[in-house]
Length: 436
Ligand SMILES: [Zn+2]
Image 1 (cartoon, rainbow, N blue to C red):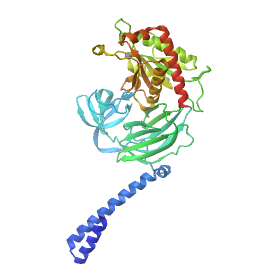
Image 2 (image 1 turned 45 degrees about the horizontal axis):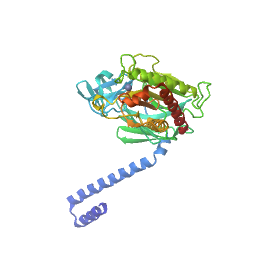
Image 3 (image 1 turned 180 degrees about the horizontal axis):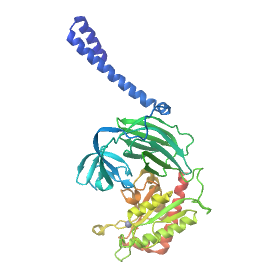
Image 4 (image 1 turned 90 degrees about the vertical axis):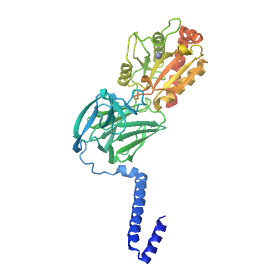
C-alpha cells in the first residue's frame, strides 16, 4: 500500500502535477506517522518492565488537579459503594467502590447517578457537590510493604478514583479509572505471593495493574482509600513462612481462623419443612457441631451468631471483614419451593462468587458428596451476600433440602448431623493441605 503510493508519487513528480503531488505527500506523511505510532505502542508494551524501573518526575503527587469550569462530583460515603452496569437494583454489580471514591456525574436517572467511568451508583450511597477539582489522577511512585500475613500496595493519587478488580488464574488485576500512569512501580522481590507487577495504559484514562501470583489459591484482598492513597491489601497464605500460629493448639488447622455463619435467626426462620422444622435452628446446630470438629483439628472458629438472634447480612459480612479469617463458610439448608414440591431435589449445593472461592467450593462439594455418599446439588456461581466478601475465600453451603421428605430424615438425625460435621471438617483440612 505504502510503496504503491510512493511509486505513484514519483510518477506524479515526473509528470509535474502540482496539486496531486501535495495531496500524495500529505497521504504519505500520514501513513508514516500512523506506522510510527503503532511501532512506538508496541515498543512500549514490550519494554514495560524496563519502564517501570525508571525513576521519573511524577509532579505534585496527592495534589488535586484544578479545572477551569466546575463539575458535579459524587463521593462514596459508605464503606463499599455498590456500582452497577445500569440504573437498577437488578443490574449486574461491578467492583464495589471504596469509601471516599470520587467521580464526575455524567447523567442521572431517578435516584441513580451515572459516573464518568460508565458505572451507576445509587444516590443514597454518595454525597454530591460542585467542584472545580478534577476527578482524574496520575499514578506514580507506587510502593509496597510486606507485612506479617499480607502485602500492601500503595498508590498515591491526586484524587480517589473508581476502581475495578478481576481475579484470574494466578493473576490479580486492579484497574484505576480516570487515571494516567506516569511511571515507576517498585520491582517486587522475595514476596511470598507476588512474582511480578506490571502496568498497562489500556485507554487514555484507564490503567491496569497486573499482579502475577506464585500460587493458584488467592487468600483474599481489601481495597481502601486513606485520603488520596489507594491501599490494596493482598493476603498471604496462612501457611507462608512469615505466618505465626495464633494459638498453641496443635492440629492440621493450628492457627487457622475460620468464620462459620449460621444462616438466618430470630424472626427470620429461613426455610421451613412441612413438619415445622426451621432452617435457622438446624443451621445453628450444624455450625456448632462443625465448630467443635474444627477446633479439635486446631482451628480458631468464630460464629457470627451463637443464639437464635436476628443478624443482618451486612452485620455478618462486617464480622468476616473484621475477623479476617482464612476462610468463611455460611451454613444453610435449602427448600425446593412449593411449586416444585413434587420435583425431587436433594443433596448439598455449594455457592461461590469470586474466583478465589471456587477451588474451596468445588473441593468441599466433591469431598462431602463422595465421602458421605450423598446426592450432590452442584457447585454454583451466585451473587449472594455471604459469598461476596473479598477478604477471604467465602462459600455458602446449602447442606440439604428441607422440602424433601427423605432427605429431611437425614437432616434432622443427630447421629447423621455428627457424621456430616466430621466429614465437613475433614474436607476443610484436606482442602487447606491441598493449597500448601
Ligand atoms: Zn438459608
